[in-house]
Image (tube, rainbow, N blue to C red; front, side, top):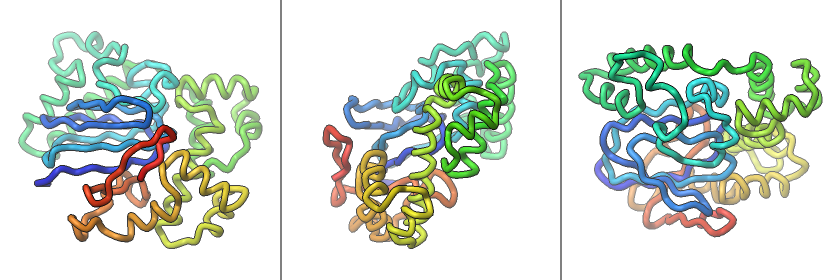
Length: 282
């Protein structure tokens, strides 16, 4: 990349760890001051964000299930919802888990990855370190993992009561453990997953009414309201922006963060994005 890039990132059912090698990225969320960091952790989100860099960005982005982020960092994920922070600012204990290892912090791991000559070696080191950290981390609940997996499988369609019955908890127990290890309550998590599916279907050319019916929204107006709340624009604005390439960057890819998903919009000066108090993109 040889020019500044700005992308609108919609909520997805994952936590994000960006291991930056050198250049910083700036992330802006509605109601929050911009955060500029080389390495970034973002917990599960319910609101859109705009990420921007100077035109050269190198590093490795790791998308992980929320419960895996809980295990890795040992931090209740409800504290990290809709936040973008430096990973080494988290109250984790990575630095005490393997004495003498020069990769006991995210900063040290990023530097070690950047120094390696091939991506194969980088991914090998990353797998080794994250596996070790996870094994030494706070175990996640098997029931939480089971409930989350069912929500993902059904794109948020399973009722919370049924989910609680399936894992053998009361609704309150499920909600409390979900907030701790997923960050979002099961109802909110279901909303994020439902909208994620809706964006995928709309990007594939499905109509709004059909998409609303397939994804379990009451009607098209319900879909539109959820879209505005969590993506910052209407379904039509989102799909049109993905179909029509930016004027200054014809043919530029959407650069989605997940294969087969509609997660991002590439923004330029001719398609500026600013947040109002409600987080709407204009």
